[in-house]
Length: 628
Image 1: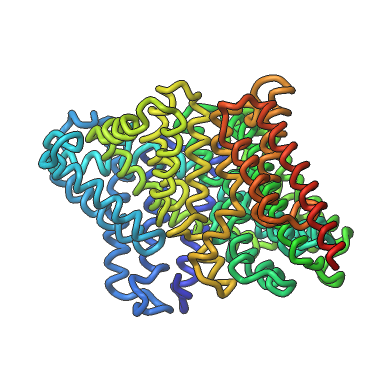
Image 2: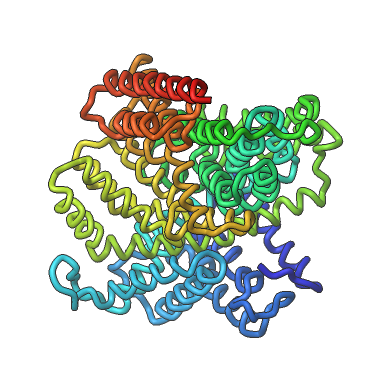
């Protein structure tokens, strides 16, 4: 992103701050009609991308070029046109009323500028996926077999890609949820960061875990999980917390790639950590018509297990290597943590309102105002007018790339739906699975991980849900478990090779190879795989069923994750040999991924394997002592 100089910097900052303030105002008093709101949202956040993000590495870094200004004007024109004609656009019948030449021109401008904005500010891979989707509508009738589509006219392609507010495209429901609920939650996260909540999270992680074996790594896990509730971006989470935690981990003996892997796995988990859970959870609520509070409850235990597994893996690794805790001088006293403890109150307000089934945007609006008010209670957290302005600007800088990413995903979903490719691709996967639910789950998990190569989490999840959820529901999987399954793998895609944005960012901070870092991130994030499958096979993990069902599902996951992480590290209660590691690892995999074995049997197997591994390690230690 450019570091602008001169008068353009305050002007653009004021633009973003004003747009964000308007979004916050609407979140509290009510939004205007959908088409007008979406037009305002895109008009506010798409054009500035061309002034803030350079076209290429050789572009000017301190000022936009004339070409950038041309892109700015071209990007503003279609959204200004829709905003001015919002009433007529809302009243027209999609695919029935004429798509006029003026609309065609505006559609071309909107799509082309969206592609360039996506390339600059998000990922080139997403831009190419949008291009391929549009090309498929144009040339799909030339393809054979299940890939064949009907013939689409140019006007139909442009309309489906741009202006179908009730179904998809740039102005579809996905852009609507970003312009309303998600926008207000981003504002809340920005005010959390501006008030000093990040310092609270950092100090809390260090005070809670710094004094124990492998302290810096455990601090990284806790801090990254807490930061993830604010940032909504695994990459920015890595950069923010990794700059502090990765050097600390390297200092006490972790290899650079391992330190980067721990940070990457911890950072991607922020998207599954309630109460915010990133943008994808709000999209899930919109798609499924399931209350966001219900989604948070269903996902809470899985998120706790995810971070428990990383902490367990870090602990076993540190024990095996004999690592020391953090230096006492680096561990903040609890009074330092408590000095910022009042900043937790706005999060409590948010959770309470969500549990009381208030709308997400109003809950986030109230929590944002509560954050400003609560921060005023102490001098160290008090937000000055400048701090409030900077929080608004930072929220705008977060919203802009998300706006174009979601609009691009809307085009892809619209193309998949209009061409029938959702049904065709789903049918291909279903035919390969041959009626086997386990095989279908594996194929869908691989599909989501592939989609996640170069795509942000939210677009990846949206596209995967369009393809995979109907197949899972048809085989008897509940709607919420199906969405959570795909959501978890969309999150994990940011840390799994061969292309893993969060792991690559962590590797750059750690000074390690990106591929080996992503491999370590995958093994530290193993709980994402086990919990993802548990959503389908063990409903107790979603707080469903009786108390015994919930306890059994939790115990199975805990035992399986302890077994798997200990086997990989080579340490349980003592160092383990290959036989003990093999027994423990196999038992953990069976407990996590073999639902054909009854739950009590899987739990007993994992516990018995841990006992056997402990006995073998003790026996090996006795032999070594006698030999010495």
